Length: 134
Image 1 (cartoon, rainbow, N blue to C red):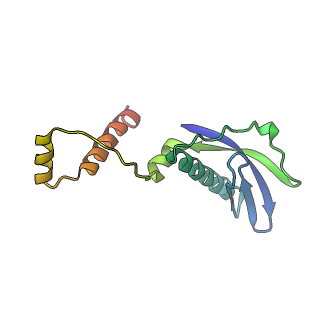
Image 2 (image 1 turned 135 degrees about the vertical axis):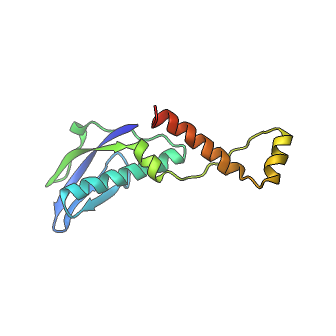
Image 3 (image 1 turned 30 degrees about the horizontal axis):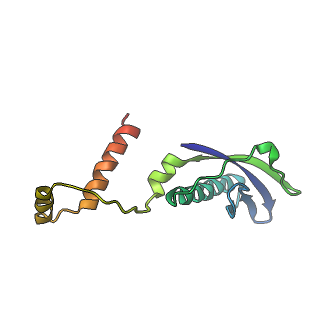
């Protein structure tokens, strides 16, 4: 999933600051413009990931023409590659209940098999087949 959000950049003595008006509190910066863009993209991606992991809807991006920076600022667009970001940083655990046959449970427990790890490994393999190896 690719998302775009307008961001406001301000140049100062220590480099550039960047804020994403559609993502409250999402502010970052960098010594150079390129670094500010990367850091702003990272901050916005983290902001969106947190919302997704918490089951919240992510805000719709404003039209770039509707963003009005203060004096000295300019507007540009940040592109978020959420699939890549989630693959790298998405680690929030979610508790799931499952049902298996009693005989399979007995077998797995006798082998000290970690049910959560087996399920996670299997789902990751399916995900990779569909999204990476497709």
